[in-house]
Image 1: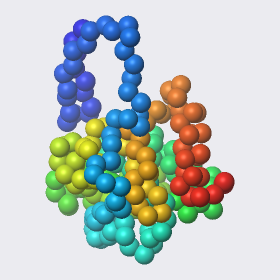
Image 2: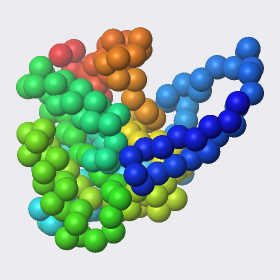
Image 3: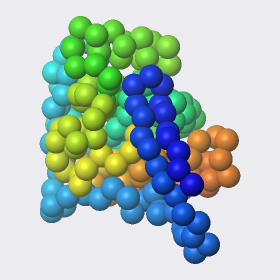
Image 4: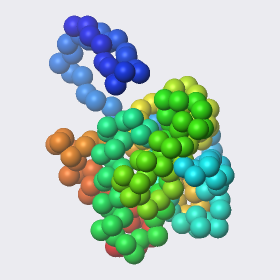
Length: 199
């Protein structure tokens, strides 16, 4: 079987498949790996308002974090973003910090920042939305040298209070899938471990 996958007007990939009765999907936490030693992540980016910030700034210091690798053009990223927002609203006492890093279809700041601002406003996001760069996986991987490459949008990086990567979840099983409920349970349990509480 052969075919093509299209995402909007900008992306097309061709594929070829052969039946394999023993095939299994790779586990979402085995696809993307942390690279190098278990050292704190260092990351500085420009946010949707054009302000340079770092995850080492005072407001993030000593707090568990999630870095979401996404794009405003990505429907699955939108589902995941809504999941994160719903989770934080349901757990207002958690000190979990979230940052979304968007890789977009344009290279010009004057085109990208308004996209990010509209996305943030439409979803009423309570966390920072940053611009990572162009939505090319090779280019995106260079921005995030602490992982072995961007394999898929979205991807979640779970960081402990020292900002060391503890887990990476590639892709998202959205609300229409059979795995969505279990993902929510696993997410809640792991976030509690990161936060060192039983919320």
